[in-house]
Image (cartoon, rainbow, N blue to C red; front, side):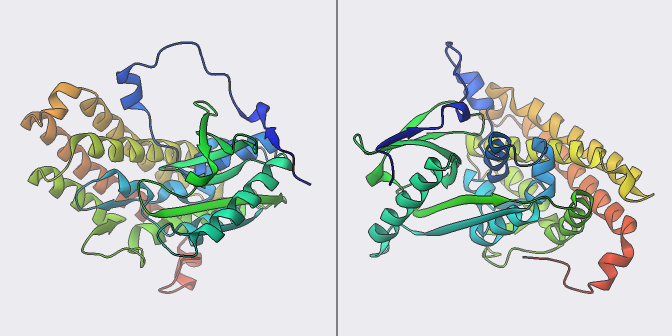
Length: 340
């Protein structure tokens, strides 16, 4: 029998008693799936993985998707059901999940089942992952007040969500995933496979996304530069996208730095991703000057365009280095190296 109220207090970090400035708020990066997955794994002690390892091993950090107007939706535009299931499986986690649209007539039935599954997971001591305008963790509930309590990937900013509001997001999509069990995996084999999947992500357009609206992998860089050049973007949303991918590239640079033993050619992979992370650091430095960025000052925009173009070239170099490190494995898969 479920309890009427339960809170995973040790999953929730104490919030410092200080005001968060507008500047700090703007510099925050939206929680990704791998970010919240990492926090739950750490809480459960399921594997001794660092945050950058989860971003890399799940291949989530290698994803690069943008819509052609650089809206914040870019960072979550992918097939959650397929990608997140495989991501969990990669690191030995058995998971169940569901997703859909809140405008469908059957949504109330799915909403009821989702709340049941999420509360059952919390009762087992495992936070659940759900989409509430970004990926968040369900860390508690209260049947009396009819509330689920959510936190971000840092475990802070506890937010009550009324039961009836579950799945009713800014977009019409709802999603949740419950982590059920964990078993050990051959970490180094998973790491090697993640690099091979990085090649797939770079060279393949996501079949779920209309190509007239979205660009993936290598093409994303051309699209970002073109949008900035044309001025058809919102400065705040574009900054969210650029910050998000800056963090993902910094995570990947840290991740591959520990994989030197996978191949005698990994030194080049490591150096290329380190240089890629530097390009993104330069981009973030420019957009941190809000007055210039928000005013679309030509010099500021041009600096970002130049760094984006350099980053695109650098990431291509990194992908080429991966292909050089594992030519036999990639070659044996012919035209289909993806596992999704």
